[in-house]
Structure formats: structure tokens, C-alpha cells
Amino acid sequence: MTAEAPLAGGVPRWVVGYLLPALGIVALVLLSFAIGKFPVAPGELVQVVAAKLFGGAHGLPDTYEAVVWRIRLPRIATACLVGAGLAAAGATYQGLFRNPLVSPDILGVSSGAGFGAALAILMSLPVVAVQGMAFVFGLVAVAVVYAIAQLAGGRHEPLLVLVLAGVVVGALFSAAISLIKYVADPYDQLPAIEFWLLGGLSGVRLMDILPVLLPVLIGLVPLVLLRWRLNVLSLEDEEARALGLRTGPLRALAIACATLMTAAAVSIAGMVGWVGLIVPHIARMLVGPSFVRLLPAAMLIGAAYLLAVDNIARTAAVIEIPLGVLNAFLGAPFFLFVLARARRSWQ
Image 1 (cartoon, rainbow, N blue to C red):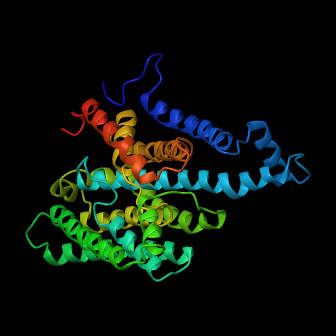
Image 2 (spheres, rainbow, N blue to C red):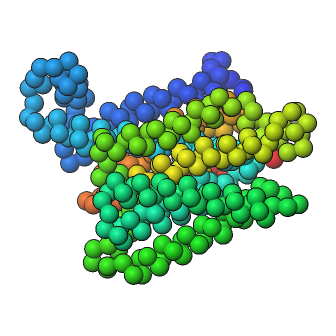
């Protein structure tokens, strides 16, 4: 059965690929406010939001307003934004490289961002500077990878050279992170570095969302506008050029957009893996491989997925479980399940 085949009752599969994640996000948002050490019921949430938007008193203790606007809302919004950005980047990379095992950190962006954050923590810089350096070094890592690929390309397969350069640069940044951890203060800086690298959204504030939202939108808009041409990039380069497409500049632009979204997400959430790897597979099973439908579906599913994982991370144990650890436990077996179900879709 293909992604175009309707479900029972004649409902197109792509409709389910959009509606189910969208409804899931709404349900998860309400659940996110309602669970935790200080639960906020839907009725209480409506009171607090209405009082904030339309003025007047909500009739509840001030603690409710602080929990909703300063703690839960920034975390929920960031989880949705990071999940959508990583999923969109993963779908883009997998289509560009024609490889289902490609993830957003294939070109070293996560390692570069981790190095930037670790260096900022070693220098005892404020949180804003940590996020800024993570973002900048994530972009620097991919820029170095692309420069190496251009210099060493020659007659080799350009995509293969790009991936190999990403592996090398990622390994170098990982080694640099290890060196920083080795020289860091073991009582203060080292725990902070480890905590950031494991990923999490516990310290997110409303003012942190805009610096992430802007790069995600800047990277997303060209992908949406060029979605039809990105379908052609999934073909062999000779076929794409025969159709009149300039593959080099278009691929560079798509890589830059996906990298921008990934760097922004990693800068605020840490090294959160698996989202950009498994979510595009789920979206592809529901709506098919066409990038026109795949991109919005992946973003919706990615937002719902990371929001659900974050809810588990902060409520499953007495202490919060790092997102990177929980994603690995949930993502690895689920990815094996997805591969078993969709093993023919890439053949």
C-alpha cells in the first residue's frame, strides 16, 4: 500500500499524516500544563490565559500565572519549535543525500555546537553567550565541511566527499570537546558541560525563544518555496541537470537552510539526537516521499514527538531525565521498528 492509497472510509493517508499530529500537539499541550509538580487543569489554564490577554483577575493564586507563563509555556513552545526544526532538517538531509540513515548532525553541526557551548562554559560566560557560541560554531563546522568538500571534491562523488568531510570535522570537534572537559573545573564547569551536552529544556525562558525562532523561519522559508525543486534533487545529479536544475547551488542552499535550523535547535536544547532521524521516516510512511507533503508532516510529527518526550523526561522520575538519553532509549528500538515496517520504501 502506497502513501497515496486511502484509508478505510476513503480518507487520504496524507490527511491523517497532518490531522493526527496536529490534534496530538493540541492534546499534548494541554497535558503538558496538567502534569508535573504543579499541575494546571485546563479550566485554570483558560482563566490564566484569558486574564493575561483580556485583562482582569483570574481568581487564582499568583503561582498559577508564574507556572504558566514563566515555566510551562516557554518549555512547551521550545519543545515544539526544536522538534519541528530538527525534523524538517532531517527530512531535507535525507532527501539531499538520498540516504535514510542521514540525520541533521551528519555534517558535524551538533559536534561544532557542542564545542562552542563547552568553550563558553569553560570561559564562564553567561547563558546567552553559551547559546550564541553553540549556534555560531555549529555553522562554522558545516562551513568547514563544505569548504573541505569543495577543495577535495575533484572527480569523486560530491555527496560522498561531503559526508566523509562531515565525519572528519565532527570527530575533530568531538575530540576538542573531550579536551575541554579534561581541563574544566570538575566541581563547577564539568557538570555544566555534561548537563548541556545531554540535552534538556529545563532552563528555557520566553526571551530565549525568539533567537531560535528567527533562524528556524529563515531556514524554513527557502525550503518551502523550493519544495518542488528539492524533489528533483532526490534524483541522480545527471537526471536533475537534464531537467534543467542547477544542482550545486540548490544543494548548497538546502544544506545551509537545514544547518541553520539544526544549529538553532541545538543551541537552546543541547545535543538532542534521533528526532531528525526517525521522524522523517514516520512522515514518509504517512504522506509519501514527496517533499511537498513530507516537510509539513515531518514538522508536525517532530513537534508532537519532542513535546511528548519532554513530558516523559520531566515526569517519569524524581529528577529530570536528559532529553538526549531518553531520546536514545526511545528512538533506537522505534527506529528498528520503522525500518522493519518501511524497509522497501527506499529501494
